[in-house]
Image (cartoon, rainbow, N blue to C red; front, side, top):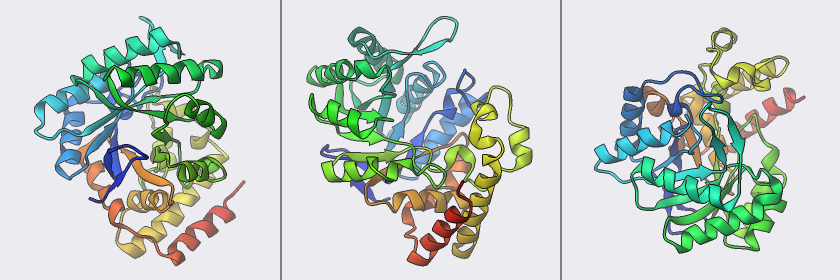
Length: 318
């Protein structure tokens, strides 16, 4: 699989990485119950196929996703790059809050290192710039963690251009992780151009729009989502946006069928086509899902295909 250098780092990432949000299992912002055996098989399938990085966060499953990844790393001969995040903490009752103070991030980093079973985190990211007033303290802390050898590089997630600039005044910003898909295009206006201009690697998350652009989502499936799946209450899975999103998925399916590809592959290929995007995170809960999107890295959409998708976006825009 093709690899690209992430920003100014020496991390050469495959164009698709494995996302582990759903691997965390059931929690306040989870995807419902998840079998650890399925998770381990999914990680093995991705690594065996050549994927060389896994994205996670301490808060996924309240530490559980990192623990499962740690087990997978111990059982695997391959050593993928591990990208994780800080800034969301939880109490004994499972209540999650935003926290970016130095002591909290230092404690989070140590806990992530233990759960993952690694000596250093390849890319440590601030999950959300919240509270905004603490962005500078958070970035100073990541710079200190890098000096101590606990992390190799510092990245941001969900930052605006203004917040990226504030961080960059303190220390290098290796990467940004923004949401980007045919459903979520806001970052095209300012964020992605800024990353390209400044040499910041962009790692897009939710390229399949949390399942909306996999080809498997239907109204019936949305109705049957378990109560502990965060999508159950998300606006993109409710009217009037659900109808719009399913129409977009249908347009992607038309292009995919013409290619003999899956809907997921075309949706991810559309994200990877952007010159600022280094790589994309594709989440999976079962090995078969990995098989359904890996081919995206091989697809170069034609101008005609991109035009058809753009036309569908225009027809179904709000």
